[in-house]
Image (cartoon, rainbow, N blue to C red; front, side, top):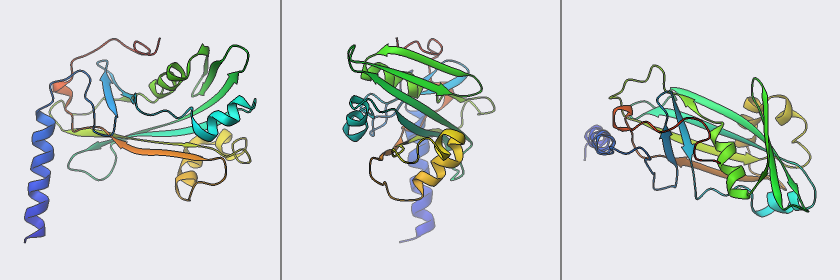
Length: 206
């Protein structure tokens, strides 16, 4: 069997799959979906519940938990990401109200409180929106999402100061005590020309 021929067939399969998705919400088998608002690609992962397990236990013990996430844009025919967005979410929990608060630090800090777990998760992921500028409308691509919860001892050091470097360091080793790891989650092959534009930021997180 010719390995080069196999790679060629595999690539054609990805390309054909990408062309067969005229959807505004394109779901991957992993649960990663995409909303396109005409400018940015926004990840949606209804099956990803990071406010759970050890992280949720810490939150209910009145601890604050830091999550670091990465969204990468890949062309089907390229192993090097065309774009990447790394985000840091600082989440706390109101025990009396049973509601979550999340703080997102970018160029300007944003926060939202009084959210359910699903609302907080969706709101945090929405901040990972990747610009689609420069991406050819007919070029097949996919998105990859990874997330890590920082452990209690490290979250207020490197993670707080530099989320990009911290994310790389977190993924380079096994999860330690109190840490959780989700992903990678990949979307199906997509093309901008097949994605119907939907309302802008926050339209699905309310």
